[in-house]
Picture 1 (tube, rainbow, N blue to C red):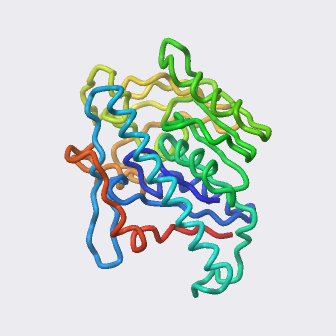
Picture 2 (cartoon, rainbow, N blue to C red; picture 1 turned 90 degrees about the vertical axis):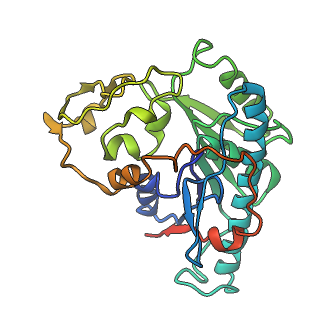
Length: 292
């Protein structure tokens, strides 16, 4: 299973999901995308920061997103080639000779989901696709030939009039069985680890939402909990409903530390919109492997 994170995201953003898959015997390779992910540390110690940035013009941003998605799709195919070499013994490592690269799924969150769809269209070595709330940037052709599952938040024409028609077009062109499932009560970031592992931060709310002041006071957790950043209430399934407690400022998880470290220009940086990844791809795309 290959995974591409959301725009500006990092390969660790869906660690809980990857570990769950690994517990069932899958090997999960999660990518960082140089010049797109918030920060990528290369083998020589250099740190490459994101250089993708919105222009504020919707049509222009869609063109940029299509280009970034295409680079991500190429990243995914590159990593699959490297894993194929690893499985075949050309590259030495702990998983040499232990990979079945004849059965590979490609997945991603947000722009990573769009990249997964595009990678599958271009590379028949991918056998299945999972799109985690990713708008399909770029062309809808060629048609998909792999079974596809698209998981989305509840989207209406009022929230995004282009999303569902675009996603429906991509799935209807597929020659294989495909599904789109809506997760009631979900938000865009529900499909990554952040909401379940650390306190919500105001800057992670939708960019069009009114800014809210930060708060350091404990926030109560209950079956229906409205985070301080003003997003929709989180409705907890009965099977994983939290006990009555508080999310105090002393709770520090790995994801919490990651978000704190990135709490500046790294996540939403300004700068050139174009990416120049070619020189650094081979060194930077050593994937995070989670094996059973």
